[in-house]
Image (tube, rainbow, N blue to C red; front, side):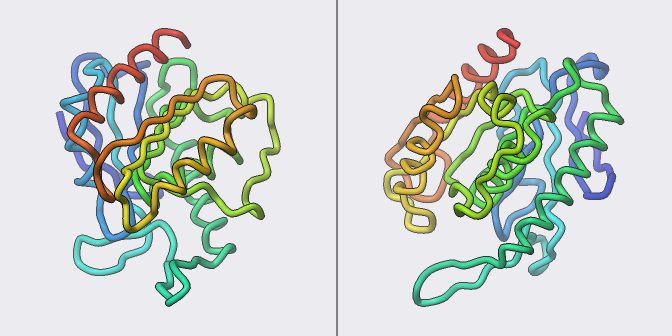
Length: 221
């Protein structure tokens, strides 16, 4: 059943079967999109999970939202560091609300983000690893050095990561995915990295990899 709900952020809640103590995958859309985007992947993923697709807090236009403002300059895309931090705090409050409301297995969540949503996923993993079972980062960018501090490196190390990027991404080039792989290597115990021949999008073969990864890691936790 798909329902629209509200905590400190609006979200879509999709369940199948039992709803108590299910694993929960929280989905974070990219800049200029909305909560109706990534929820379309749910039928292709682990049917035993609950899916929560969140609407970012910054309204950009009709049906268009972002996690934090971006400035497009000749030198590239930039963001205010403090706005990024505040977005991370807002998302952390939401995730704690999900944990309190739905009591998922193990008292933790799975987090998946695309583009700006992937940046948010990295931020939460670094700042609040105890909230999470694992991370899926799709076509994202690892946070800048000033935001890379991990207060609990041991909890962070235990998180499994799946990082996916398009070879022909012209929004966040594939070098971003490769940097994330390089940065994570040696800092976590379970890292899977995949590249696909697409631009800033999700390759048709990727959902099967996401499903297999989620199922295997869920059984291992």
